[in-house]
Length: 156
Image (cartoon, rainbow, N blue to C red; front, side, top):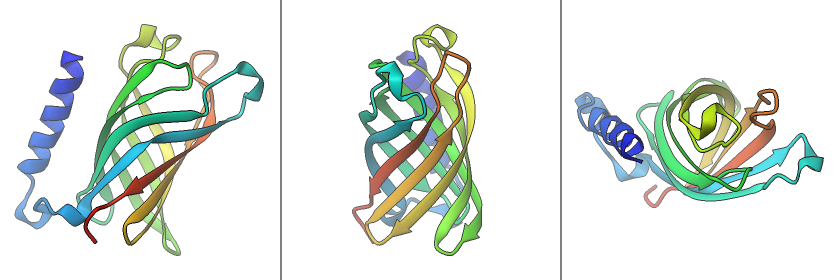
């Protein structure tokens, strides 16, 4: 837990020290309540609803910082910290990857932290947004899914 707090503090400190063009603005901050994961292995009794709390801050048109905590598909608590890089557009949908570190998966690295890079698409309109990620399976340690993350921004 101390490592997570250190990672989050370091990430937010870096964000606060960013260039003047990326000043913190409420309209760039998104709040989410976890994920919904449509798993490929439907017969394994995995948890599809993954409630939690997370933040995402849009640094510029292509980059966002993110961190949060949720109950994962194995019914264990997981934390994450990372960054979205979405340089491509398909209409009003942003395409790219989210890279970062995750923990809390009992069968993956003994529940410890591990890196991941995941393809992601994002749609944002007004106060609402949706991140959609393709989570690849990792042998029998992590289960593959299409993951949906609904997000809300208080300022427009």
